[in-house]
Structure formats: C-alpha cells, structure tokens
Image 1 (cartoon, helix red, strand yellow):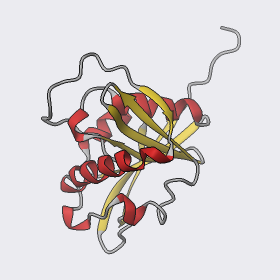
Image 2 (tube, one colour):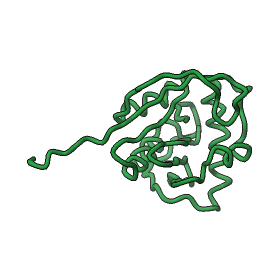
Image 3 (cartoon, one colour):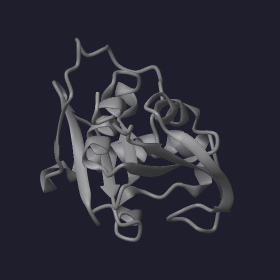
Image 4 (tube, helix red, strand yellow):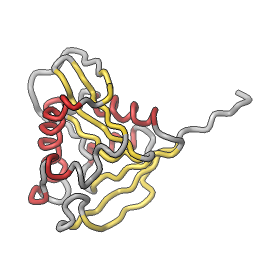
Length: 172
C-alpha cells in the first residue's frame, strides 16, 4: 500500500474527490500512479530493487478479483483502491497529489463497501500509509516477516491491520 506526502506540483484548489468505479480507460492512469507510488513505498521499506510495474503484477496479485475504485479530481484520476473479500488489497495515490485527501477519500469509500471487519497489510517502513490507516480506525493486530507479495524473492515485514465497524446501540 502506498500513501505518502511529498513535494509536487502546484496544489489543486480545494480538491473534491469523486470516487467512482474503475473503467478500462483508467488503466494508463492507475498504471502510472502505481508505478510512481510503489517506488516510494519500496524506498521506505524493502528497497527499490523489488520494484515491478503494475502491468507485471496486477494479474498475479488479483487487482481485479473484486471491486476497484478510482478517485477523480479536477486533473483526472488521483489514485485507486481495491477491496476483495473485506480486505483492502491495493491503495495508491499519485505522488503529485500526496497529502491532499485522495487516499482518505478512497479508504473511506472502500470501508463503506466492506463488511464489519476490514483488513489490510502495510509494509513496515511505510509510515504515511500506517498513519492513514491508524487515523481511520485501523489497529495493528500482528506484524509478520515473510516474502513480498508479487515479488517473493524479497523478504518483507508487514503490519496486518484491522478495522471493526462500530456497533450501534439499537436503544440509542
């Protein structure tokens, strides 16, 4: 997962992210976003030598196994999120738009479509993504060492996180 702050182009004026279903014509944008943001994610975790493009990994990692949404702003697609069986499996934001709320909008949209328990895994070292998930109510339930999903040659440490939907008191 990747959601980072960074210096970028001039800020967009009060972005209002529209989250919508992925369409095939979004492929070029999400590929560009993934490839740029994935380098940032790996730089802060297992190292950029582990980088593979979205085109190389999307099938094996099941990007389109369930629901995929994109956040769209005045300058086009800003990021994407995938939810499969109540697990957020992908969440990437265009590095030029880090820190502008696209990641939060995507995460909240996925949570609204998930069940009472939603899970994700964040690579150790990906502090910006970790802060996003913690801010949105996720907790770390386990930290595991293993192999990097999609490029198993590389060792990786991941924080397994969960968010339980608050139970509403019917008497309230």
